[in-house]
Length: 504
Image (tube, rainbow, N blue to C red; front, side):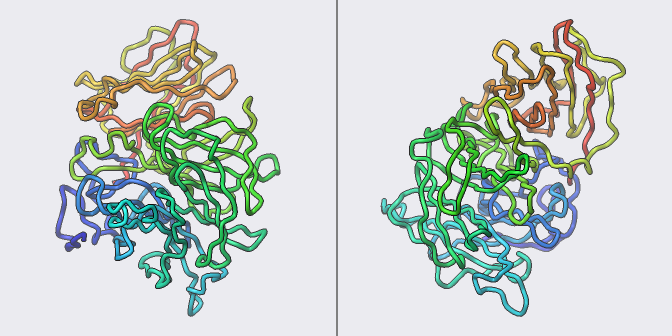
């Protein structure tokens, strides 16, 4: 149980959860993200229960208030009006006699199908997995079940349904992470559930009584590990509706450990049919896992992931907390050589953090490897460039402590990469110090690249978000020195960096 103290109590430079309405002072903790959500203290993993309601984006997340390593799961809670600045709120859901509170989703039950609404108040309903540790220890195969809770005060407090669980386990060890959405054409709720090595779809008229509709994926996609944290949502392209199915997997990602694959297809209220069967990934870096989209945002689909990897998540060298989210991202469909693909770009709301952009006075040509600035940038920044053609190049982010992170494009392999082997502390796990690759999806003759660089992470968005990578790292000092290496024939035009304000 998290002990709530008065606003006079401090942890480092940051107030505890009871001070949610006060903006914390800028953090000086080593490696503390400055433009990403983190809990003030203790452990977090999967974002879940995300729902937009009355001008606020609610972010719930897997949280252990008793330590900085994974432990008995609660739902932590934060809200934001702009997807950038966050108010930390009291824990929303605590473990109970039915088990720990694992991942799930939340919806606005505007038609009051559940009957939870009263006195004209619209219920928010959370759908989550109850994980019974006693059943797991006894090696039962039914220790994960789906339950619900509801809120009548816009998500501030929650009451669990007396009839839980609402969907009992039929005998599948991994039976979890319900993502629920309203299917208006048939006036029913659809639950997309991770069931070991596949997805199972269920439907309900009232969020309480569920029936099985179909299964997907037993022989499709990546199967290097268990399937988790699915999401199903529609997106429009050229006036036609398609459905996107996200599935996180651990292990089995393209660069090792945790990752999220996706399929584009059709959904008829019962069955999902993919347009293509090849495995594709929403992010090729190693540190974007279990991401899902906010509910109730209309045609706009906003995604956020856990910026970590189960290979080393319990070992990363942060002190008072472990875990962060990616920046919020908007998902869209586009046509390419592979058919219909999913693009990922930073949300426009991040512009509120931008300070004055600094443009280079002239194009950067080959061999220019001196720092672009003489004094190290002390905070986060955005870096943007556009090439005049296709050739290998690298952007080196470094510091005076001889740490360096190399981000670039390899023409021979037609791929982007992030090399964090020399980016700082990496001795906590033998799998951490590596170079990671992402295929270039675009067939364009020039490359556009945007990097969001925080004190301990880099997020790469190439060619309008068609190729994406997210990696964390742990330098001794901020990587505020920027240099470029490129051949003489390549011109890096529109090269700029924009210092970003801290969200603290």
